[in-house]
Image (cartoon, rainbow, N blue to C red):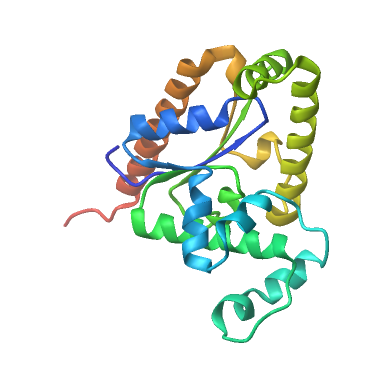
Length: 222
């Protein structure tokens, strides 16, 4: 890509979001962060990777969100300990890691983990949501995790409930609602390759539009 690009990729369970995110990142020549974000967050925060894995995209079970954000600076910018639920520590560790990666690397693809919330003030962010037809999602989960159809359906239901609760709580927006994102795609309509192509084309068009806007607003030469 000619310019800086940050992509946040929300996804329904079984839609193939990780596979799509990896393919998009490869096409754009940038890194993709999904589970990889856990290692980055662990290094920066000092929390064990196992703790972050066990609380990955897990909604909090105590304290109000406002209290979390009020104590944010104390938790990460003072030497004194702050009594905070582990789910919130995990969220803040990944939140910080996302912002640091965006600052240090410039361009990246982030899968889930409220990346669009962490980067909402970044003008280069493009937020995307991936869905798929229900039976396609069931078959994808069955193949990926070698589950029976009934267990795959149960997996999807629980995973989507957990992700939506997590996102709605921390991002203060609605998970999966079209007006939350720049682009929503049904992977079943385009297939995996077609979905990747559509995202890449959307990013290219968005960059051109942004560059055009900058040129239009540039002061005229004397």
